[in-house]
Length: 428
Image 1: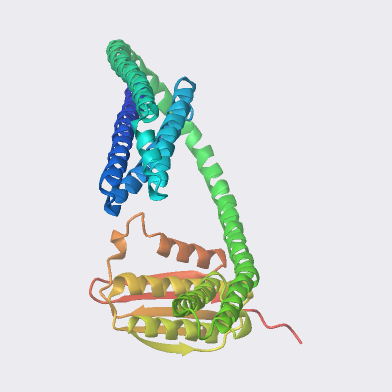
Image 2: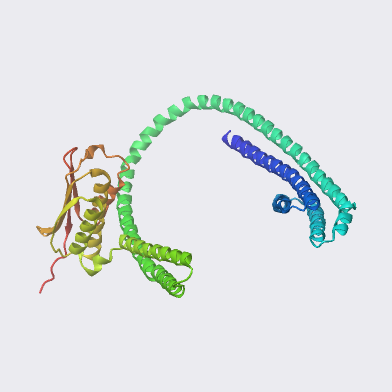
């Protein structure tokens, strides 16, 4: 029923759009004829009074005429039945406009008798009659198309009505069959219940096996995503950075060549340079979000300090850091950075905190990472399925054989504590 209803709806919409286009075409044709008459009247007024202000409506009507002709050509571009008539109409209108322009030109050259003789001839009248005739043909053609479109709408509505009625009858038949089969289904369900119980043990084993496989796959996908981020960051740095820098240098060269001239161009170039600088800064921020370069160049502790400092400057929250050097693999360092980054993002969105404490320190052969705030907190038992950030943090940590603890209470802030394995010292 939905399919039939939607089909009838879109078919009707298409027909109505076509009818609307036909109405616009009719209005355009009427406007075209009216503007030709306006141009002719303005020409006669100019010839009689020699006042130049009569040429203003003459020129304006010519522009309107050209727009109307272009609109008609566009409307009938795919209509072979009217293309020839539109071409003839354009030729007739252009001939009429040429006759008007020639009369004005003869008058301006002082050849008043020649211009009067041209006006008194039947050339203009014949061209105007031809314009009216061709316009009438197009109007009649559009009237025929309108009638066809209305008939199509009525046919679509009738088919939709018949289809809905037929499907309603089929639905009633299906309902009766459904009620009949319901009783048989209940008996069958009792038999299946016993079979399902027998298969449940097998399925539990398979689920455990699949879970392990999916965990490994998810870890692989996480690694692949970070690799893709790193590749994208390199491409942005190398290719987009080169393009923006080149554009900035070109703008600087143009500005130096236009020094002292074209103030407006200088102003636009200055705005362009500012925009390019903003684009370069945005590119740098995106690259850092994709793959923090400080993590490779400065180490985890210094990178977390930079992250905390930028968060404090951006949000106005007071951040206390206790960051000590810990030996971690590059993969685990990236996990720690992403977890702290996600925790800070959650704090800025929801916690309404005034102070934040970030800790990185060795503890009992493990690396301890803690993020605590004094915000509004929340009830961990009331987490919804949309809490993907916390779930993602927990998965990242557990995928690296770590442990994540979440302590939160409404009105008492939030604490996220993580323990991850450090690099075992090599034997001498």
